[in-house]
Image 1 (tube, rainbow, N blue to C red):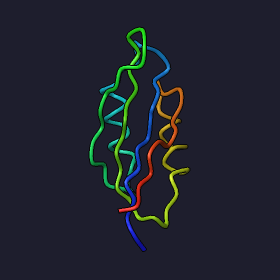
Image 2: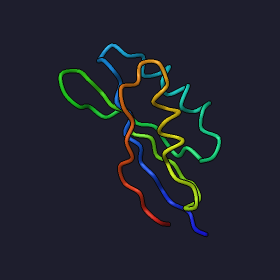
Image 3: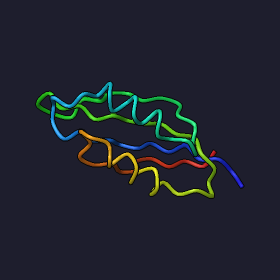
Image 4: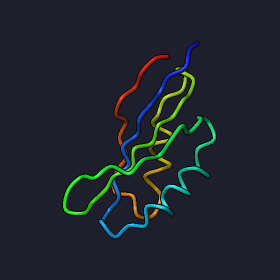
Length: 86
């Protein structure tokens, strides 16, 4: 069993979404993985997405984490980006 680095792209529902609140909720929500960083990345027209870098066992999938994050108020979508075996 190995470890993977996973990047989740979290898109807020508007440019006015409270990204700090979303970051805080993501940090308190994720228990099965280690958060290595959360960065704001510009998308367009003032909209920014959050890029969440996680380290987790390769035996776990990201679907549970993606579903939980998508339920946070202000989040429009969540999708896994890069997944790299370490």
